[in-house]
Image: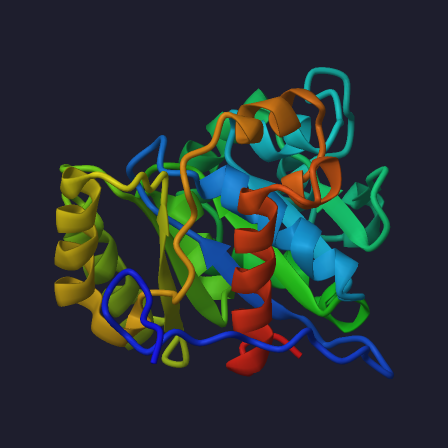
Length: 279
């Protein structure tokens, strides 16, 4: 029988069936405190793949750098209503900060540099770990999945994302230092699970930036030894097409649908549905 890169029996996942109704959304935190691991890229492209399977997706840009916002064609410098606006205006209807993108079934709550002040401001908030959960609660009925694109840190914003989430996807680059710091993230997940959100799950580890070299294969094996069956069956290859799609402000699944990386992200989306993580 054919096997995947880790020697597991190769699994193909069927194309998801159309949904008869939408919502309530499953909330996924895309999380890794190490930057440059493909976190935002994966948020956008998993959203792109799911949208093409008829799933309604909301991306919450929870990073002051606003990469997901820019990556979906919204000017982070001129946008007025952002996630920061919603966090500190509890009487505000959260629908006011939702922006439609140019892509069917993909909406976004944008972010910009204003969000960098939130870490300090949240310290004095009542229920400071649950502010994001309060914002998303009223949006869940309209979407099938909400993807929170976290900033590369383990501060209060990330704790808010973990508190609001049903589960976590951890993108890990196929590089030597990939596992450094993931142990700290797992400790944070365990703390949130034990103190605030007992149902929080780790949905999986998504290996990104993979090339067929001995180095990458060794790193992949180490990741599997650490996380076992939590590692997604599909590995995302390093590709020059991904930066091109970022410049075009479009998911690669839409920008270059026939490309190898597009197929990989579609396979991840299929796995999420097949495993019951997303309807």
